[in-house]
Length: 117
Image 1 (tube, rainbow, N blue to C red):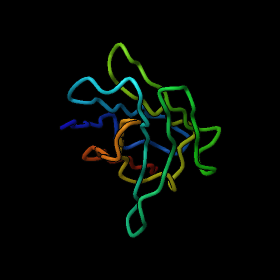
Image 2: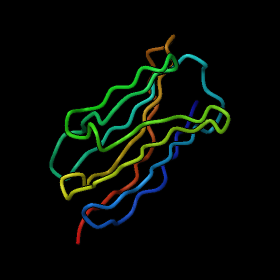
Image 3: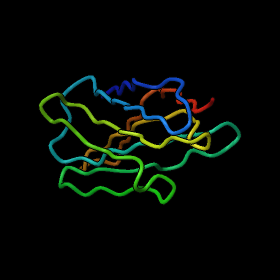
């Protein structure tokens, strides 16, 4: 069973940047869909963006132009570069992985991002 570990969260001032990492515990399928989600206090979990093994990347409107998803296949990691952060970006951020050939989804434990002065 694949385990995902997020890292890189923390406290940052408005306008600042953070980079989150998501590391699977083992090699994953060459054909995958991975994504970043976030959940703010009192709100439902929402999609931040997804990336597929074929190179498709989509972002939610709320982060488009500020956040960037990438993968390093050699390091078996996914990243979320977050720029121009604002307090509305405060949430627990989760990564998710699913093989293209499976309906099983794997989630990380989440990493807290707090944007505050």
